Image 1: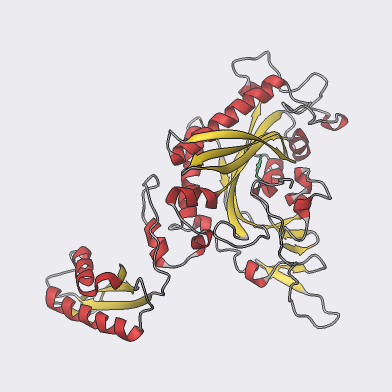
Image 2 (image 1 turned 60 degrees about the horizontal axis):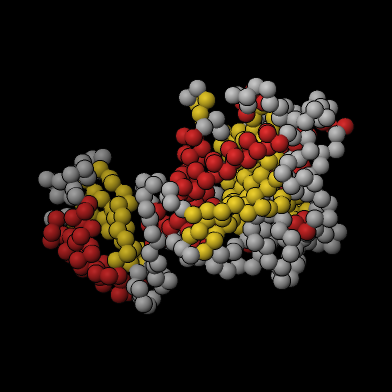
Length: 442
Ligand code: DAH
């Protein structure tokens, strides 16, 4: 099977989902997304369930592992590329996932009959509009706006089966790095980006061919090879930053409609070759159509889930969507480079009970030691205490009495806890706190 995008496509055996937007006969069915209304048609196959993932923005949520990986990658690019003390790359992480077929396909030279355009692979809102299938969908518009070095980060949508490593919504970072002749060939002013037969001022009179596996026909071999060397160095630097200097890697030749030559980078991780990104030299037609006609660029795209799952040993992609504090707290307030190994939490539900108390006159909200309280909770509650966190501090405006509120999260590893038994334990904790700290339960 042809590989279109970086991600192992399976032959999808899903039935085409007929969308159930109930409408009266002759009425025009519309879908409203982020305050914009879209008229549905015979292409519409996006479901309410899928639409419910829009705006979750996991990649921007502080405690989500995807956000940790995002920050580490952005930092790598910020610190590796600076110009007069400023970061060279600009970062776009709030672009709307609702895009046109022009953005997702046409601008990237993906042919009309390409399998990646089919209704069975994408979530269409209507014939002309879909949920982006890759972050590369924004490449042309950002080039057109005059940018030359940028990262695009966000959620992408592809129809697929759901299992421990596949989910129809996932997250990507895509990037473009462009250079003019004077930048790329600083040290070799005699070298050129383009072959003499190609006139960058009139790109459209030249048929840019990709028959030669080494380069596009408009580019010189020197420019392509130097870009390739930089691209590969930068990306190896990135995986070494994430996985350590000794990470074993290999380059695999690849094909993408929007780059030539193209490669995939695989790393050897826990006894498996793991594909982590796709990349290549941007097809000159894309640059010429979008504006900059005197540059050569490389681009790459990588999936955040796959990296986060490997780095933190997260066994199931669905956990990324968890709102369960047993999951999120493991990534909370961590230094970016800290080694984190995810510890599976029980799949039985949590019970959350709050405890609030007035402090005795000799203590204030700033002098009370929360850690003492945490120990007491664990002493009394034992293994069913999953987490204790400070929820609120309060000073009464009139009485000036100080009060604290903590949430206690209970969960049993082998069975569902009954609220009544949790309440019993909670009462015991209240009694013990009164005794130990002289507090008054509110
Ligand atoms: N868009 C590709 C995908 O989703 C990944 C990719 C490959 C992005 C090569 C790029 C690139 O920018 O140059 O699978």
